[in-house]
Image (tube, rainbow, N blue to C red; front, side):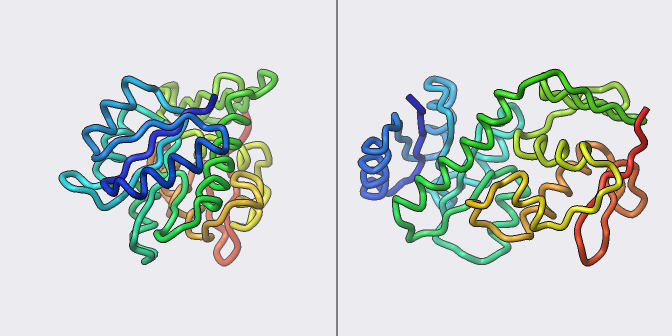
Length: 230
């Protein structure tokens, strides 16, 4: 049974989400704040985290930032704020998706299933395809990325985004095409999410956006993989 950890300081919201998720076949664990969430993650090892941004003490952004130092657990953030800057902050820290309050339980379930499909599709990768370039090696089976011989930490979603580009060197992908390939048609986000995750990948690869070695920007369109095969 798929396990969901719901972190929110509003007991009524947690109860509502629990009822709906359990009716959909999920196992649900609750936490009232960030510290309780981190303890629950260590104990329960959930499959996905639903994390509120505004909580007493450390907010959801801080908890997510701490989590991402050691854990690539899929995370959907909840917020009462809808400004794009909040989405960008959460995505930069490492959120997989965003739901703005008030939301319908059906929408939350749809987003949970979409994020899990991406994660599980990656974890079940068939074959042992190795993508080898000058300075970069990607193992699809091991879901491992090595840059200059050093293994780098990369989230499940960003690994899939990097692979989508690296499988077709030289091809220009629009943001909409990358959303379709990596997130799927049921992704509810905006094009800006692609830019945020590309920036994260570049940072991990030490890839200068102005003088890229791996991922080039095609202004007004999107991105392409420019490294040479070796």
